[in-house]
Length: 194
Image (cartoon, rainbow, N blue to C red):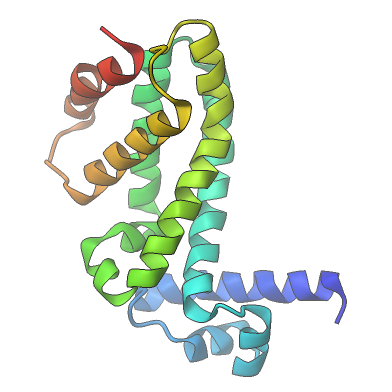
């Protein structure tokens, strides 16, 4: 099988997995469901996705996240201040996850019980992808002294990742204005400084 055929088959399987996760939920979707949705045999799915269901979950999450990060990176390049970038980037990320059923379900507490290994492994991949996209922006901001000099970029991205996750998982019923105020008061000073 050629590389192009393999890539096409893999994308077809990931597309099917995304539809199945949205329809049945992460915990209830089986490889058989995905194979049927893709119009392929189970054996073909297992040959194409050697990590099975956990790899498919990660592939769907990373593909959706990469699309979002492409848009976010463009937006960060246009932001006038680090404060605005942190606040609006966080708001965008929270909205994105809430509107992407697979990603939202992946971060939900009940998902961890069913997919401990997938959740733990994927979090590292997701964090690495976020760092890759955001690092250039924060590196530049730090060189221009717009970011605290005593913090590491990777730590900053991890901190924001944890804030975004908590805003999604622990919805305090704040409206957008309240969330922006919370971020400006408690999160921005940690990154930008007083």
